[in-house]
Length: 357
Image 1 (cartoon, one colour):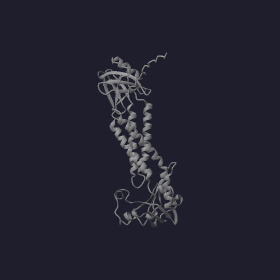
Image 2: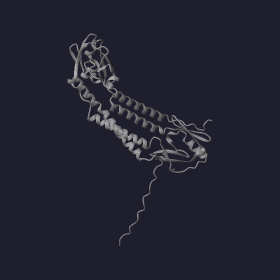
Image 3: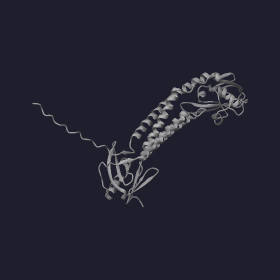
Image 4: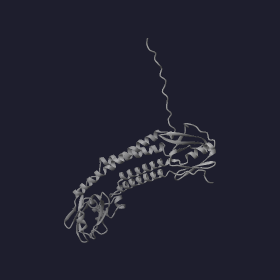
């Protein structure tokens, strides 16, 4: 059965939703990438990225709630969302009303089940819908006291948002108060050998150049000596790229990793066994007798990177506070959110005071 009037989704609204989704995806991707940028998974950043992603999904779902279209048939309405639809028979409609809320006109259709709230600016066939309701002789009321049932805005989600917001804020404060410590030179040991191949340099293009370096020594086959983003930013790249197979090298690594992965005199931990077992992080590099990376320069680069990452802490703190406040508002609200505008209350009459004689 062909509809009398076919509803179309608002293209501009759909484009805005896609842009919002793309922006959220990019931000979440970069924060997740930062969580896995170091040897061990950064749990605080991982929790922040997960919470922020869930918050973005929540915003997206709330935004898409009002993204609707209506197909009008002879004896029923088909209310369409982007991924689902609902059929409403004319016998199930008891009344309808038009009202304004926050400077937006809404068409409210009261049914025997859940009421339907349609934002007028997003419904392309709004006049046809009003005409069809009148043709069905549906009773029209003004300021119909209809409430909008929402499966998203309820106490359960409010509680989750408050818990996640508080948890996220706590991790953010912890990361700011207790940042990662500098590398202690007394805990390092220097290995000597010759490169088995030229240094493998991986860099990312962009305004902030970053990357990492992989070194392999003939004396330690199967072991990859890794220089992370911190060392990459302070190493002498020109001299590094000039190195070839057989170049004399001296690398400083943690004594603990030397005992676990090379000498095998210390028991490995869980992450050392199951995560990057053949990788050893390097904090000082000397090639052909020239120091290309020192512990001091590594620590300076690390402090600079930590300071630049504080902007993420500010962003995450703002988001976590917003989540907590909004969750508290949802928790205090009823499951039914009023849609109709609040009627203006007339001021009480003022009694006149007779003049004194």
